[in-house]
Length: 264
Image (tube, rainbow, N blue to C red; front, side, top):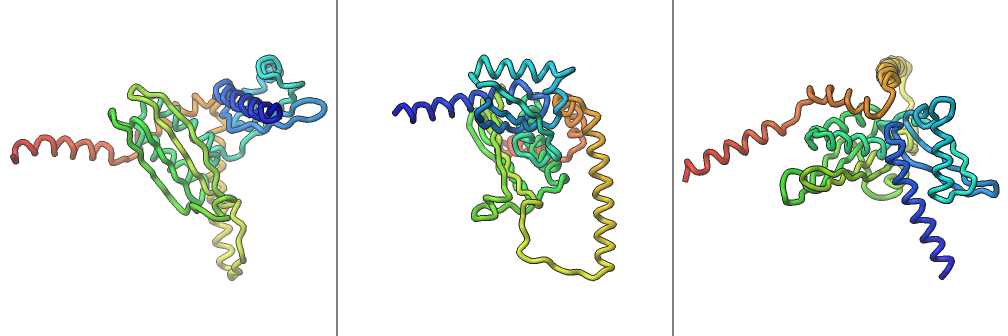
């Protein structure tokens, strides 16, 4: 029983540690942590979108975090390494946190959902599914599921290419849960290769050059942003131009309420 208790205690401590890291380095775009025990200590690999925030000026941030992990979480000689995420829009945990921040700041849940879908698909995802549930509009709990692209639901491909994460956000009406599932193209192993003619290859190269230019522009814009909080503010301004059917739906509901008594 002592071995089972130790396993349960370790898992509980790891859960508390990940919850702490999610809040402590939120502005750094924390995704997940890989923790492994070695004879010399404990290796902690932090996957973030902005490593400079975790490291801090002259290493002050990472030293303070090391002391915190050693004292509060009983990690033996923690050795922290920071790994930068190349494409944060294709990481479910990062996008869950961003979408939760938008809803927490007062953005309508459907507008935040459509914006997140747009960002993920434009970054080169094969498919994405966003499920949002909880007190969305009133006292009754509800849920909505939005899917774009190709997303394997089960089988070998679903285990390999699909990643998912869950986040929760507190609003004035209650708790809202967000789950994002992303299928990535680069993880799909093709069963066979199609050989095209040379002219088509030239066209494909031109397309890839255009896509690379667009991705470079997006990456330059993201590099200018220093924290995730600034990224959220910039996205909220861009989100205002996003067309959704929420306003039209509210207008039709209002007309239905007005015309019902008149028809009776």
